[in-house]
Image (tube, rainbow, N blue to C red; front, side):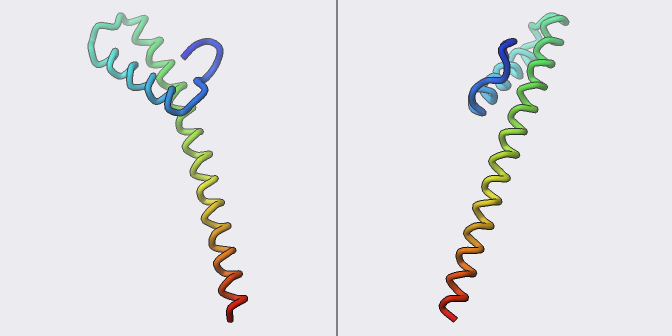
Length: 78
């Protein structure tokens, strides 16, 4: 991740995390690079978790809206 901030999309952040994992798994990163990659990975994972939480909240809200609409339809039909 650049110093400019988090990536513009969940997909970009997720792809970068995969790159970081591959680099760390290769065993070729120096100690300093490993530290930087771990820091970047942590930030990206926190960003992704926040994005997923936002989507989850929006989905929950949609489900509640659908439930209210269904209950209203059922009460009108009764």
